[in-house]
Length: 113
Image (cartoon, rainbow, N blue to C red; front, side, top):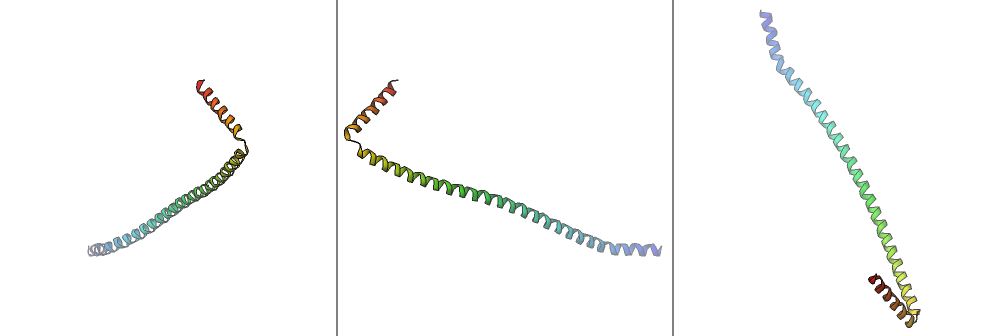
């Protein structure tokens, strides 16, 4: 009986220590797991950021290409407009009047049909 009380007393004395060690072990495991989750979340966010950066870069390149194309078309338009003005200045006035009159007739005919 004395021996059984002593074992019980020892177990009761050691039990809080066992609980403390177990809680420390679980805390360490939990900490490592949370660290792993954070690393995975960081990797996922980095991938998303890289994909968005790639899309943004593609859009910037596309915009630059469109701006260059627009400028090229504007230069072409200006050149053609100047060329048309130069060619029109060489056409005699009476021919221009006939052309204007015939285009007016075409408009009237379109409206009547």
